[in-house]
Length: 387
Ligand SMILES: [Zn+2]
Image (tube, rainbow, N blue to C red):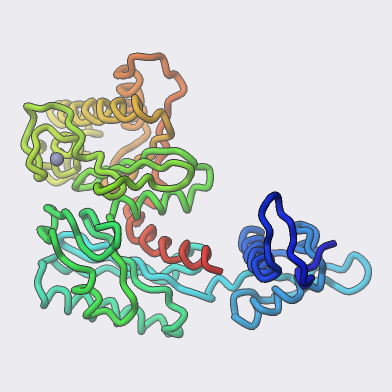
């Protein structure tokens, strides 16, 4: 068995790895293995990764000293000494996700496995003004203090914005919804004690779907929120374009003569498929609207079917580029029953020029929490990649 203490360089394919490089790779392999298996033992790690026991012991000792891995109890003996149970310390780091909406703010603290430790909500109307940022910062700081957790082990605060964020994360490049185009990360940071980051809300929500549903590889995530959103996920990663962030499917045109969108164009998906467009057409709040839909009200049913037909056209358009899995998430999902999903699925199949009998939607696993959870997960992922 190969140890990593040898001084000579090791051949791996055509690349030569120095002992330091090899140690670094094995270090990460050991942590990843413990993280993935959740409960393991020194012998199991050694066998699975084909590393010598002294090598595994050294890496484990480093992780235990750093508080990243812990020994918890013993396995039953199969003869000889009982093997110790090794596992990751899920609380070694904590990440904070914040979702900013027009009328409120939501916050959640997650451990390294994405488990929610604490969450809260504040009714705070967004305004691109200093008093707002001050109040927001005070609330976030109070939330993190109340965790009673060492500040140096909190990975930071990731904030979702209903808008696009520049690739360097410093500027909000487009946010007509919050009317804060041009706002800077620094403005948020001034009032938040921990390092803060900004992310497009739909991207964050899609990241949560990938995280909590390991079966997803290639998919389009559609957020049926008050404002529509959608991103393309390829090989478990969000496809980030050049200047338009992680996709802005909501501004794909369904009809050039359609209603005017907040982006300035006409007939965008947003104007037909956002929850706000449905609410405006219905002239009532959506809980009441869906009560009427499911109660058989003819006018509301007609509006709902019209909504679903437009959504089906949008899905079909996207499928012509990427026939992948489709995940439905966002605000409207809570009101939709199985029959609604079936009807939408039927419309999508009818809209398609080709026979696709197996087409089916996936439904979001994180519901209305997806954006704030996804925001926190971005920092967890960065941390796990850096171990
Ligand atoms: Zn638009």
